[in-house]
Image (cartoon, rainbow, N blue to C red; front, side, top):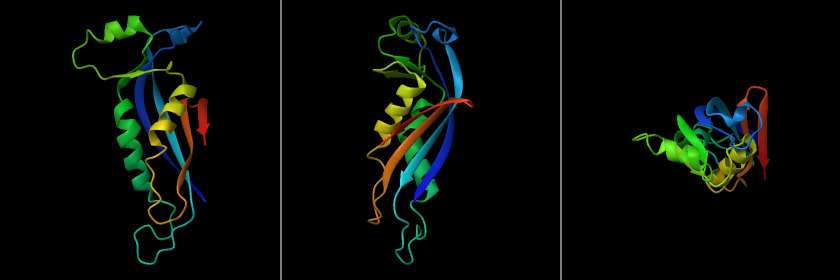
Length: 146
């Protein structure tokens, strides 16, 4: 069985070497979908009986590991020295520095890596992260799968 939880956040980025508009500082209303697989929990009397995992627990983990860190932040590539220098002049600015250019594809992979070990198989139901889908716009997204 597979389940998916969707969360939204706002963040800025830029693609420094892009030959179009994305080379400029801009932001998106991102959507991230977390897809888990596992057996339906059959343990009698537990809160999660009949579920793969409680959706509120999926949300809590995703917020803790990714969403709350990226929400209303500027996500910048470590090699983008011009933007990093600028952001460093803004006291208390929420900046997330990555070792990769913050494309939808790279953000989906980074999020997958941050979440991969976070979902624990508490009930022996073979729970595991299968996919992170990251929407940059309603019409554009990237999937990183197991």
